[in-house]
Image (cartoon, rainbow, N blue to C red; front, top):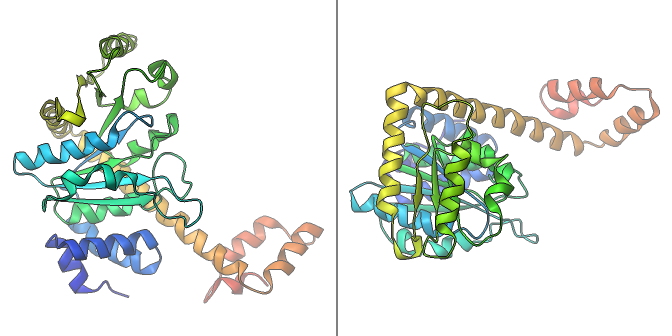
Amino acid sequence: MTAAPSLVDGVLARQRRAVSRALTVVERGGPEAEVLLQALLPHAGHAHVVGVTGAPGVGKSTLVDGLALAARAVGQTAGIVAVDPSSPFSGGAILGDRIRMQDATMDPGVFMRSLASRGQTGGLSRATAASLTVMDAAGFDWVLIETVGAGQSEIEVMALAESVMVVLAPGLGDDIQAIKAGILEIADVFVVNKADRPGADASVRELRAMLRLAAEAPPWVPPILTTVAAERRGLDQVLAELNRHRAFLDETGRRADRRTYQVETLVRQAVWDAVARRLAAARQDPRWAEALTAVAAGTRDAGGLADQVLRGAGGVADGIH
């Protein structure tokens, strides 16, 4: 199977309909998605991927919307992958982010896609990595990932992003202390959003105090910035610091290390997806219940059955007997 040339060419030309269709294919998964990603991967690797994470209510969506517009103001393009919570009924994304990002998404140089988390822990959808590849191959200068907002488990964004931005806001309780053992350690840039509220200065001071607790000086010291994203205040400075971190990665060779980690994540996810497909096919075989009964009775080894399912030639069911 080969990817449709028209679809690949459309993505490379950043045609919105082609990009949208390609994202649908990779979110659905399966052999068609694998072939499409194989065709697009050689054209990826140029965008700067920024992960935007933080607790619910800190204004991540508004901040991402403003960052995309700040990039457009200097002639750059931006793709946005917003991982929304899933509907418990349909399994689809609850499109809160799309509603809050209407300003940026009206710009032809910005493309936004909501992905359903489908219960995935870590603040990311299973299709996020593949979607980043599509956005990257489409030639966007920036690709912004907004995570669900689930707290410490969101450290998984580090596997995909080259710059990680942790967003906080004053007045949400003892949030810095609550997350210090998790996502604070992965931040390349800190943003205290809603800085017009009481307590913003205290949040900045707490962050600075925590950074001083480091055992040794890191090669990159995360800047601490304040914004009022709803009023587009402070966003140019955030974009400037992200550019500075991008230059740091290039100058130190760390970008290549992060790219290798990202590719490994893609491969690992592809392996898990392949295993899931084989298992799903095996469970459809009428002999599956019989095989499970044998394992329960102790006349068959669970590990051996698993190996046979994975090695099944011509069809997963061939490994069940």
